[in-house]
Image (tube, rainbow, N blue to C red):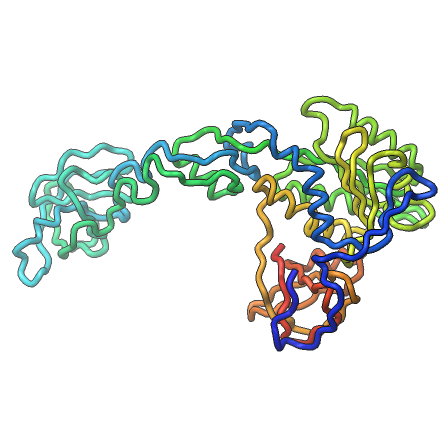
Length: 444
């Protein structure tokens, strides 16, 4: 992350986020996992996530039908097998003409033509005779000999007369309103590079080239595990002390929106044995049923009943507190060979964790999902931020180009999250920003 632009307001500088701070590691007395006491930088934690899941990017490519390829990334360059357009065609509803027929017209003015046979889209026309103008529809093949189109509204009369009638047309140059063969895409050209995320335009291009399948990097399969005795299922009545489980659906929707195959499971208990049994079940699955990564939410902080920490006792997992707000408590490692990324339990914290930590890693390793578009924008209001932490604020980008904050910095503010369309990133070396100070903004 970068700091504010020069002259954009006071900034009290501390250790920069990207350099990180000390990493005093000790063995937790209650569990065999490693705990990192000092704040870890966001950059370092992302690098550790990347190292954990990088082997997934080395898997063989797959060929998927276009309908299944949406949200994936190309595994190799896509070469056009045909030209687009595949033939010269009309850009307008009008009259196909030979531009040479206008030579000698007084002052380059209009000339009269004999109306030829109409050319609908999909038809193969007969050659155009000199002195003739053929009614042609948008996208229809240009007849041999024709090299220009006069829009029907410029004709006199401004309609399509019967074949053999006479029509007066204004002079046009060769190439007017004609889409030339290969003017969009030339056969043999690389039209999409390996790693390109397959969104709607890319799928449309592949379909336009006549392709039914494309080579893609195998999509990542992720299972979400929501944990906590306080979680109630949607549609049930809340008992005292309970809240509805937003995390599972929130992250599932975020992953599906990003083109990732996702499933979510809730362990509505603080019993670490229940979570451990669910992890054992997932790790024991085979083939397509086995997830590539498990994301847990909750149970990673410093409370007395941190079920995730206890469930992962004895496994190669470490827990750290990141220099980030919200989303500080994090865990990372493997459970019986299954990569586990442990997010905090507050809804906004786990969503910010996905956006700031995991989504950028997947974008870099797989090309999908696409990384968020980033820009710099002036603040519509002043803010304060805790020293030594990257603060991620929910925000909206206004029509005037300013970014306004939505809600406070709290990690429970789902309403503010739903009302936002951007994230304002306040670097760890900044504690105050005035109105008009520029910040980095990620559009969500």
